[in-house]
Length: 301
Image (tube, rainbow, N blue to C red):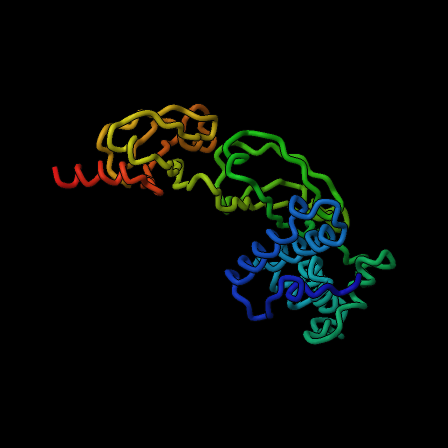
């Protein structure tokens, strides 16, 4: 397995903070996302590499293993368990005195090759095989969702490590929320159970709505005449547009609440937050002389 420098892929150094890694991933994900690069095989390849790098480095435990074991990081836990078993069997074989141990700073390649390369197993003693069953490595992935998609229950199919996974995403998931899919991680060793797959939802900023908990905020532009005299204005919601009555003499920045027009509450069917609409009054431009005269009259009245 060729060594892949995940830090280089993300464009960060090895001392980068978790926040640095998250920011770097999101910046590159927006640039390389397949939706923005249709039919671009190179961008698609880089996007997959980016996701792979983020899966490892965004998880502190996996990152520590990657820093220690490099391309063998997925089997770091098995290595450490095998190391302990090796010590135990050596004590049994040599009356409590340990023989050759796995060196802390040595190259682990030979060990991993014999362990996972299909050629061997753990060391055998006169008491039999020292092999054991180990759970597979957990996996971590990020799934990008638009705000409107997160507002409805829907199926989603994605690919991770060449394997297609289909899940149903419940309405109301939030940015940064993580779910676990039991048994969808890396395969176990020696008949051990598979690891688990952890999916973190990434919901970028929406151009129309700001989400605050289960509530939504939006702005709507009205002209000066509607603000002064009153009238009707159309307001977009997650499930279509509604007509809203504007009261006469409405001030700029006035906010009204549309009850139940916000975001669905996670795993509480039929419950929704509210939508808060703020009026942004647009002043008229390119006034005629007559219009300016009328404003002067209002000013002096």
